[in-house]
Length: 213
Image (tube, rainbow, N blue to C red; front, side, top):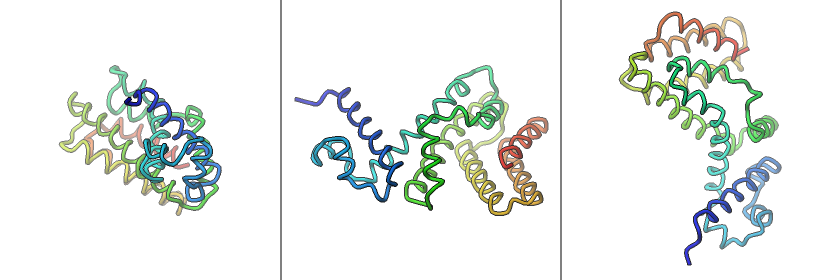
């Protein structure tokens, strides 16, 4: 008899949460499939009903974390009374106090370890998903006439890539001169890529500066 879909998804989610706890406790590299099987009290054969390999579990765990983080942005994204730039600004203003517990745990554990597969894949998937959300905001802004670009997806990817680069650059060289240079570059990317007004540029600039302090 086919397995009920609700039971399948429930058990799969349980496995994801168990794997998350183990990855945070032991690290991804030091967590074995056997560790997950023991914690979940299932056989290897049963595991293959849900995941083909350990890397698939990793992606599922990271997507679980990303989905939790995205929930705090849902009210902003669904608010039809906020402009596209307004949504971007609100997302930037979002307080770390709103971050789900699982995200705080992941950040704390990652900060204690050297760059790992978990860290690399987290950044990769998070950037991809953030770019998708941003592309939707940009496309809506173009449709309303607020923003001007023929390439919402590519512009979103460029913005995310630039944001990551200036953040890392500012950490490596935190001088006032360099931070100003990084901020000016990022604002240039936003203004030329989205065709936004000077008043909105200034508000975004102030936000970017505050994020780099």
